[in-house]
Structure formats: C-alpha cells, structure tokens
Image 1 (cartoon, rainbow, N blue to C red):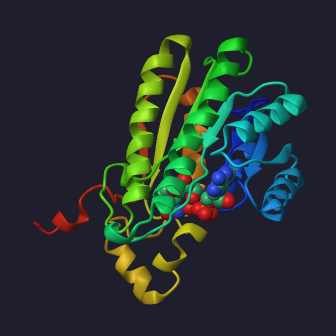
Image 2 (cartoon, rainbow, N blue to C red):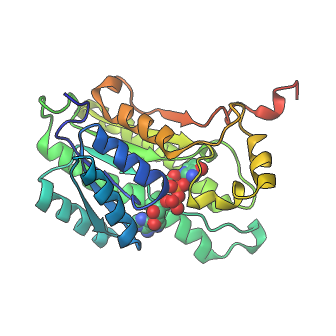
Length: 266
Ligand code: NAD
C-alpha cells in the first residue's frame, strides 16, 4: 500500500517548478492529483502526461487562486471528477521585486493576493470539505492535510522584496492559526520553507557561474535544491507518517536558515 493511496490532492501553481515536482511525487505516492495552473495550460498538461505515463491519475484545472469565484470553480471541478479532497498543497506564488521606495501598490497587492490571499481562499474551500466529510480511516487517520508553500523568507528579511517577505511571513501565522483552530477536527496544517530550489522563479540567482557561487555562500550544505527535495517532504507531511505534526514549518533549505555568515565566528 502506497502512503497516499486513493487520496485526492490539489497542487496550486502545479504547471512548473516546485508545484510540478510536488505533483509528480504525490502521484508516485499513490495520490490522484489535480494540477492547477493560471496561464500555462501546456505546462500543466505536460505534468499530467508525465504522471499518467507512470501509471498515475491526474487532471489539470485552470484558476487564478487570488480570485474567490475562480477558486470556488476550481474546487467544484475537482469535486465533479474526484468527489472529495484529502490533501491541499498551497504552492502558487510569484515575485514582483522592487526597491522599497519604488514599489508600486500594484506590485504589493499582486504578491499579497496570490501568495497570501490565495492560500486563504484555497484552504477555506478545502477545510469546508474536510469538515463535511470527516475522517475516512481507510485513507488516512486525519480528516485532511494542508501544506502551505512558504519560504525561508518567512523568517529571513529580504531587501528589495518586502512584498514577498511580508506575504511569506503572513503565510507562517496563517498556517499556525489555522493549525491551532482545526487540530481538534483532526485537520493537520503545516508549511514547507524551501531555501534556494532551482526553478524559473529564481533563474537569475543560478543561471550564471558568478550568481551560483554567490548563492552557494548562503547554503551550508553547498548545493542548490531540486524540486524532488520539496516533493519528498510534501509526501511525508501529507502522509500518516507525520500524523503528530501540525503547525510546523519544515525548512528544506540545506541550512540556509542557520545564519551561515556566523559559520566562522561571525
Ligand atoms: P514557479 O514560478 O515555477 O512556480 C510558481 C507557480 O505559481 C507557477 O506555475 C505560476 O504559474 C503559478 N501562479 C502564479 N500566480 C498564480 C495564480 N494567480 N494562480 C495560480 N497559479 C499561479 O516558481 P517555484 O519556485 O516553483 O515557486 C513555487 C512556490 O515555492 C512559490 O510559492 C514560491 O514562493 C515558493 N518558493 C520557491 C523557492 C525557490 O527557491 N524556488 C524558495 C522558497 C519558496
């Protein structure tokens, strides 16, 4: 029996990067996966094809997670096909970087609405279904599991990206508050805090040898992460193997949150 056998998982922003990697790992663990995308239908279809080629089950569904009506529609489509949801991975996110004094209100609002409000909207829909359905012991001892894709920047300030850092700091307390409120209903909610994972969102940080060397200075484990590092953590957090874990951020960061500047005495 696979750890996520017959469970239904939704991965938002699943057409690229970490979301695509997580979707594939969840499918390999036995979950039926809904790959949400905002604009890249082809990217999402490619993920679906890869899952199906390995014998898994997946569909792709378009929705902008920052829009309440689109999120409702996304969940309705998921229910129409799979009937219910067991695992939500709030992964969709973006950056709109600018120096603080130059940051426009649009840049601020866009990042907060996708990275933070999007997680609120999707979590609310998932929790409603977890509460309606309750525990199905053959699938999991929890009534539902949510994994919030946060970042090391929920605790590390980030100059030039105050909208992004504020959104991830918000995700941390959103996750902890939901976890506290919903633990009695046997709903587990945790975050993954990735460090530097090689994906399109941070291409400028690894695509030249100079940028890569600079980035490695921040990573004690001395390698840039790959999406499978996050996928494996997501499978564990979604499975009953982590049944006593809720309200926690699991940093998957090669030690980036260990203040590497102090490694030689500061
Ligand atoms: P990515 O750009 O490949 O993935 C982000 C995904 O979110 C894309 O598929 C994008 O289309 C989707 N998206 C954007 N706006 C959306 C919307 N309104 N509705 C639905 N989907 C939307 O980058 P990634 O690195 O894979 O990022 C995934 C998550 O991981 C993000 O939340 C990001 O903040 C987080 N993260 C990434 C890193 C890293 O090093 N790559 C580090 C820390 C945290």
